[in-house]
Image (cartoon, rainbow, N blue to C red; front, side, top):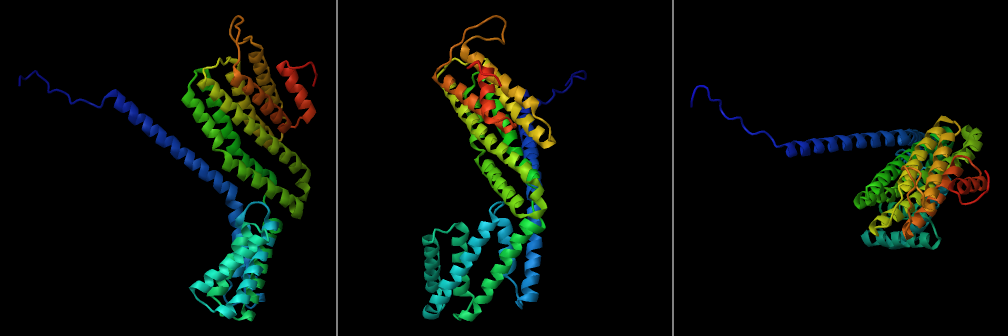
Length: 405
């Protein structure tokens, strides 16, 4: 090799390979951040629940050991934890169902085990009969579960002697009452804080999905629009959790003396959440219709994606206003501006681009306009506007009537 000749450099990774690696790392980083945020949110939401369960178990064990002369308290703390952790709402009803299920399981076990004895098939028969009776009594899941579980205890852990079953019912009753007292009286949840935390993923995910829909409609990207629809459809578990939290909050302000002063405030938040949920259902229908419009190659005026962006933004500003305890004026302005844009799209004249440009809506586009109006109406009510006034404001902003707010 000549002295002035340099060895050939080894070929480095191709640009498209580097770009793919960077995207993969960015996706992994974003996924990790989302996971960390989701776990932190769950810890904030359920942190008090873990404290309630620990306190309830300790108190139930103490009472059963010292006052019921139970040398090995098992049923009482187990029942207490079950009451606290079974659900965020309807604990009073679940306590009654649990105690009824325990009583039913004891009754069936005490009645049949002296005749059948203890064994595998006897256990199966007793459980079947206990659950059958619970079903015939139209019991809920807690009653059915406790009836079957208690029947198993009687059939496997106890000799068929009636007297030994009574302490288990007393232990269960003590555990249930302790769990109820801790969850509703001693360490009750904070109603407003709980609802805000439960609403956070619903609102943020809905807003993200609607912003994505707006971008997809602008460039007529059907795949992105369908992904937005999938995001909204996947919110069912979070909406169900929000409804459970609302039931829990209403139960707490009704039964917990420490939270009685928050009854009026919660009544407003409860109404706001119910209409927020309705608006999200309408937003999902709006997304489905705009996705269908893309599939059918219908014309979509540019005012529609702009209105969808405003609807998404109003969800976030409403949540911040409620959290800060301020009047949601910006939210109402965004909603009404979106309604105005939808009215312009339906009327056929664009006011966004320079110069008039005539549009026509197809079948799905017309239905999407109706869904947008419904979502806007419910969001206005959620912001504190009375129902009739909200309807007038929507009609006026969209140019569908001469009524004044």
